Amino acid sequence: MAVGEASTHFEVVPGVRLAAAACGLKAGGNLDLVLMELAEGSTSAAVFTQNLFAAAPVLVGRRHLAGGAPRRWLINSGNANCAVGEVGVEDALFCCNAVAQATGGRPEDVMPFSTGVIGERLPTEKIAGAVPRLVSGLAEDGWLEAAKGIMTTDTRPKIGSRQFTVDGTTVTITGIAKGAGMIQPNMATMLAYIATDAAVSGELLDARLRGAVEPSFNRITVDSDTSTNDTVMLAATGVSGVDVAEGNKADQAFTEALNDLCLELAQGLVRDGEGASRFVAITVEGGDSNEDCLTIAYAIANSPLMKTAIFAGDPNWGRIVMAIGKAGVQFDLTGLDVWLGDVKLITGGEKEASYTEEAGAVVMDEEEISITVRLGPGDARETVWTSDLSHDYVTINAEYRT
Image (tube, rainbow, N blue to C red):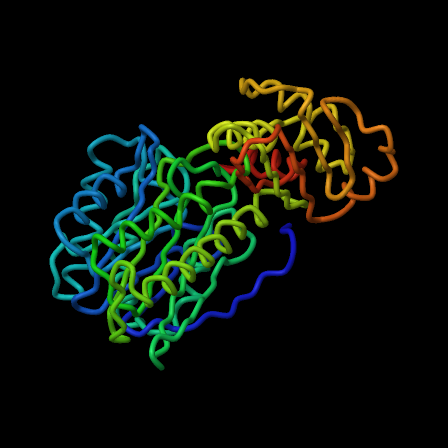
């Protein structure tokens, strides 16, 4: 189940080749291993999970990225390689070495990534055995298969592209992402891989990635849980010859396109949240600070009572009031206004006199719902995107390992 339509259209990124294979980590012969290869001279940037229990590939990836610009990214789904001790790092390095041997490169030039079940050792021999097939299958048009290969409980791949022109030259940005549960990032969410053929320095690439992650991947929640493996990667191959330098015309176009693509991918994760039947945008405005607005937005988005009401199509606005009040943000209640879609629920901290249950039910019956909270006359404003909490969510997670 997922909310809304999703396109599988993408544009190839010159200087990037990808391949996907099934190596037996997932049942049914599903794709579960992906290799991405970047052109020589490419730059890379990453944002990693802040979960204290960061998985072994995250630890290795941080180290390898700090030592240079790794040109090959190896991603497995079905196993998180997390919470297994030092052997997890050894297994991640073993996989890096397998790619290095097959490509003639160095293990340090490989970034390992994993997603799936926590607490089980990575089946390295299966992965190493499939690496030669990945290398021989690398192709510029391998993006969609790669998007499928990184999925776990996702029901559909998340993929998108943006293009812009600078002085007659077209620049492409394409990205893929996965994640349907364990979603409330504290940096990014689950796994996302984005590449462009623009030329961007590593320092500027890092700044632009962090700027794009904050209003997109850092504004979504399915279940309030931050994964141990969350990573967003961004690479620039430079093949187009368009130079993105801070403040120039190309930088402005690149930043806008990257921000837009990240928002699409992030919202795609919520639309395909585990068991999701509704997509919800929660905007809190008029606060004294963005932090206050964000705190209240997440309080509403993560309330099980609120999420189950949304699943049921029940305009139980008392649950919105409860969530606002429990957030711990101090403000003048007499200035509080709340809307469900375009139906006003609360005026000045009290039930709107013209509100009817029938009007609220019409809004709650939609697949896409908006909730707007105005705290007062402040200038701060934040939006968080979430999904409902359904029977299917419980079933998926109760049976995740069975």
